[in-house]
Image (cartoon, rainbow, N blue to C red; front, top):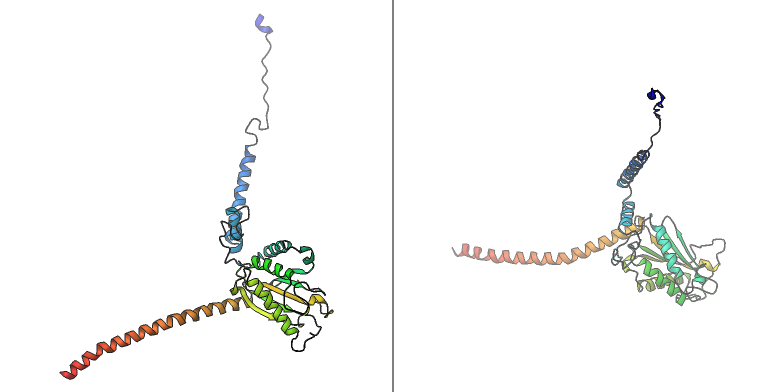
Length: 292
């Protein structure tokens, strides 16, 4: 009879939900799947990307610190042979702006140095003032400030393969000496800038043209006598520009001509030796036939 007083056993079953340690496992698997898909899309994009973009991405993984493009670094070697394209011209502009800031008289220069990216390339303008800035007044002789700036620019542009244009400009005021005009002054200033830069690291093969425009390309057309019209322009051209292509073709043809000239003498010399040997070998045969 005591057995009838026992309490019934109650079993509670809970339905629904995924408790326990495996409840969020699907989230980890989904995250791995999304990461793999993203990596796949990046690889597919890189396969069809511009070669410059591929090199840039590959260069980042080789050198995340970003020092590979510096001259003399362990990854860049001497830095010679670098070509600036439309994709990385903005980086060159920033690099040159940093170089200008290193000049002793940067506070004076900041309003007289303009850098703009155009369809032709990177245009660097060195603007004069009424008292002169980069050149002595009315003279092609550069000032100390002008020399310092041109040296800094040459150090940065020297490792590049891009062709450079050097231009000289004046205002519309006539030059005092009748035998020396704005044409001579603009050309002489451009050539003086070339000499300084070439002596400071710029390669002779980079110079495509040195031009003097006098007052024919005014910066401020409505103010032809404004001092800022007196300027030196340095244009870093794109490698695929028309003039750059002509410059490259001219350099290549010049190298081929010199190579042909050097090999042509050798070939003519070898040919003369062959002719002499043939004549010498033929002479005994003819004499033998006559003697017989």
